[in-house]
Amino acid sequence: MSFIIIFIEDLHEYLTGSRSVSGNIIRKHSKKLDQLGDISFPLNIKNWTQIVDKPKFNRDGEHNIFDLLSPGKELNAHLESLIEKSKSWCLTIKKCEVKNNDVHLYLNRPAVITLCITTVLQESNYGLPKYFQERIAITVDDSLHCDSENMSLTQLRVHTIQSVASNIINCLSDGSLEANYNVKIKLNSNEQEKNVLVCGSVLNEAGIKDAKTTAIELHKKRALDMQLMAQHKYGIQVKSSWKDYFEKLGKASVIMELLQKKCHKTTKITLNSLQTANKGPSFIFYNCARLSALFKEFDSRVSSKVYSGLPSIDKIDFTLLNQPEEWEMIFIYILQFPLVVISCVCDIKLGTINLHNLILFLSNLSSTFSIYYRRVKILTSSKDHLLPVLYARIYLLKAVQQVFHTALHLLNIEPVREM
Image (cartoon, rainbow, N blue to C red; front, side, top):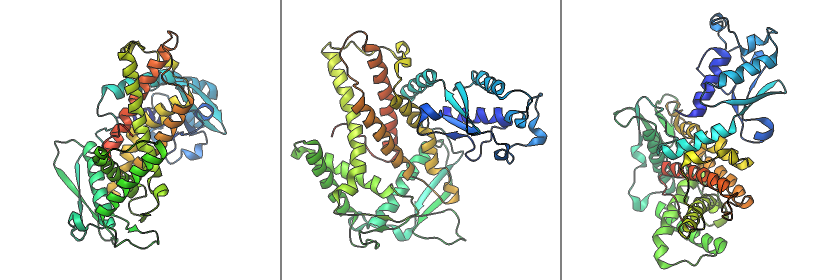
């Protein structure tokens, strides 16, 4: 299970006596982490009245929230008790602050960073907890089947959703289980139908359902677009041997384009707009390749004796990772990655999937990493006093790459190693 999930359950149990977390009363922050902390919850008792079971609330003389916010003891004493209690949890709290009648929690960053990086690099399946207690099979309505030569864009979207959603569900399930719950993807549904996922149609630039463009045509167009974008933006000289490479990029771009909106909503494909269609996928692929290039250059410098070899992870001082983007990559993108994966399919029995969450995750991670890469020089000189932070950053970015690649694999996309 995810560390952040366990931490939220520990915190909720401490506050209410129950590990059953519902709603977003405990909030995870995604911006201004230095100012707002990492997690917060309200002090107003009205926010907790539907959660606290008052007859069962008193256990061994403890109440909490904090003693139903009565003046049993000073608030600061309660906060100190919370910090002390967290020392037995997987994630520990360094300090608490009260802002606008909310409690803001600041996690112990060095400990969390060490835990996250070590776990990601030691567990190849990080981010894929066994969430489902059963196997769920997703099929496509018979009316949407078609041979690959004549597949429409809407049919392509349906099959892409089916393939990616099935991949994610399988990764979150016990592989030894047989499928015992079936869901079918259709273009529309009525209220009486159960176990149905509705897929929105693909529209052309005029806002009309595209019945003309085929899946093959879109894949070819996006492959050419990715080639032209690489030539114009990155100044590369395209070789004829790279045809297969750009075909893969084109298909990967189409997957992201078809999944970037909520699945039940229509999505528009602008066939001849190079900038709007491929800016997002290209940026994601470029930063994926940038990570690979960084490690390739690091290994080259090790081979040429500029750097000594990367020390074992237990010898790394992760307290040196004190840049804001370094904590953002840990807290928002590595620590919370399992939550993002689960959020994509957790409501499937309610007829909803949110595969666009994974596209948004990759886009935001790419933006944070890109800002960090431009602002912070990773591969510094080999002076002794600079090497410890360099090695810590290499390990951090190896963990980022692992999460990046796992997210792409869930989308059935092969990670891009050069661009």
